Image (cartoon, rainbow, N blue to C red; front, top):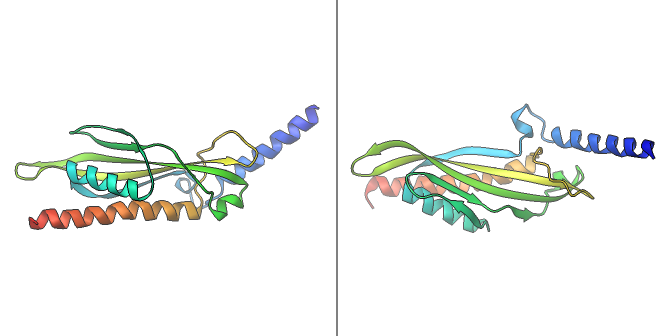
Length: 167
C-alpha cells in the first residue's frame, strides 16, 4: 500500500512540475496572474468602460469600491480549458478579473485622472483532481488574457480621445 501512495505522490509531483513549466520563458511566464497597464481615465470613465468590457466577456461583478478608489473584482468564471492546457492534463479552468485605478494626477477642470490596470487570474484543475492550482499560464491562456486587456485598453484610448477633445 505504501508503494502505491508513493507512486501516486510521484505522479502528482510530476504533473505539478509539468504545470509549473508549461509556459516556459522565465520566472514570470509561469504565473497565472496576467497584469497589464491599460490606460488613463477619470474615475467614471475607468469604472464604466471596465464594466462594459467585463460584461462583453460574460463576467459578473463580485466587488467594487466607491471613489476615490477604483477597484472592480469579478467572480471566478468557469471556462473550457485551452488545447495546450488539455494537453497538460487540465480538466477544468476558471478565470477572474480585477481592474484597479491609482490616482495619477489631479486637475481642477477634469477631476482626478487614474492609471488603470487589469489583472486576469487563472486557476486550473488536473483531471480527476479536486484541488485548484494557480501555477500555470500557457501560451493560449496568455493570448486570451491579452485580448481581454486589449479590449479595455482600446475602450480607454477612445474615451481619452473623446474626453480630450471635449466631445
